[in-house]
Image 1 (tube, rainbow, N blue to C red):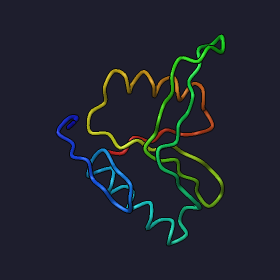
Image 2: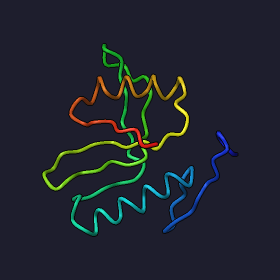
Image 3: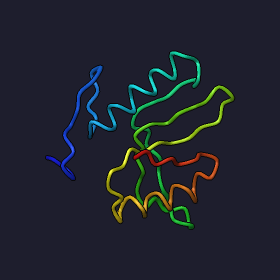
Length: 105
């Protein structure tokens, strides 16, 4: 299924939702190889909870990146920011304030 005219792209055995996401993967690989970042992972899943602790869903970022000093951030490659994404991003930021959420266009 094509979502927002994105075409799935395959690289290194991974399926990316868009060409832009696959290109970001290549950039992160170069940053890792050059030592500018310590590590990165694909499709990290973060549970989301209501204030009372009830699980209300999850947020899956495109990447989780760790820099040389150990700082972490989640990246999401977005062309279109949907209402659902905005809701999940709001809850992610509230629940994981120690992990910056970066939107890559």
